[in-house]
Image (cartoon, rainbow, N blue to C red; front, side):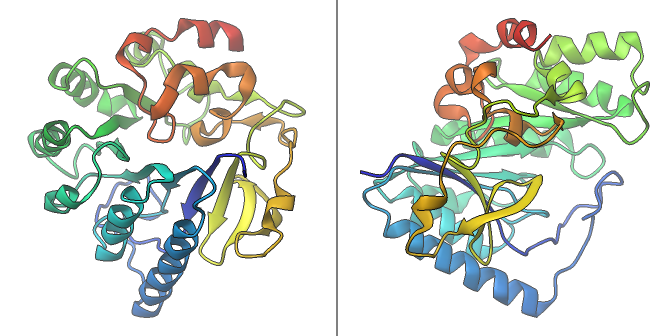
Length: 298
């Protein structure tokens, strides 16, 4: 029986309904042809996944923009969540969409990696969406881009979210390594014990990583790479001999600064710490004190 496989899927869709100033895809619009092609490629991927009944699959949609405002992605997640061999189907999202479609999903298999963007939506509306996930028993994490002006919103978000929800912070790097003051760092670490790993990255060259072996990045054409930040192609998902491409590969990069990359480095222990919530970045409540990982990195 083939080994379990996690797939990070990113099609050509790059449009977003938000206008975050720190994002290159803010208010970007895809052409009708791009949307049509994206939907067709997504349908092909879901059909492929349905046929993988001998393999346990985990799927994370990692679009450039916001995918779940598109009916095709909602339908794909619904269908995938009902496949017995798909243990988890998750998506990165701004949570701006209506939630009624979730009633057709298996709540134990669908999950979300949610990002709150201050200035794009009121905190109360975002929290209402989170409450709707809670009411359905759906796993999710919440995060924010760690700009200094976001610190008050981050504090309010932490106070309002259920304590069981992991609140992560992605480091803001556009203004250089001295962007954060000591008091900023203290506030960010108090909320997210893994923040320093994201801020400084991991020295990764030559280190073991599950990407390319049990975790792969797939684009709309089915082209497979080990992860989003290593461009070398290793195969195509739809080739009959695709499984031959899955083999252990040490990391070729000097540094990994992306959570969906370094989360798969065995020496950090993220898979053990996050457990079933690894794809959606949902740290179990008992693991919110993540100092063992932080100490292992230093």
